[in-house]
Image (cartoon, rainbow, N blue to C red):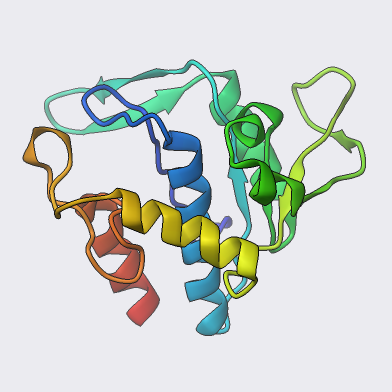
Length: 178
């Protein structure tokens, strides 16, 4: 399509929620961002937190598991404005470790479709080689034990530690290798 390759990943959906969903989402975004840049591709990411409708939508012929709501739309708007960076909303940022949160900058006011007034995003450049980023990602890897998630769901157990469910990581790895 005209948008290129688009991935929507959700943390905190029923049966797959952790106390550190915000940190997991940002760390996974940083690892995806780093991987795509190493391959010479541009990667723009928007991350938001909030209450959304999640579930199966469709018919017996075609069915998708989707997330719908204002926070999903805001993430899409952030992605469109981030221009090769990671834009994070205030709710997500507030749930990140203080030293990592303090390493991010704040965007200028953004005019976003469907949003009244100016909106600000916390900007993560996606550089995983800084000491703060390395410590942030390492703390999540060290906090995860085993290679299964809730309900026995298989988890990725390579460069991203156990930050991405295998169902999300395999298509990403396949796409990046092409």
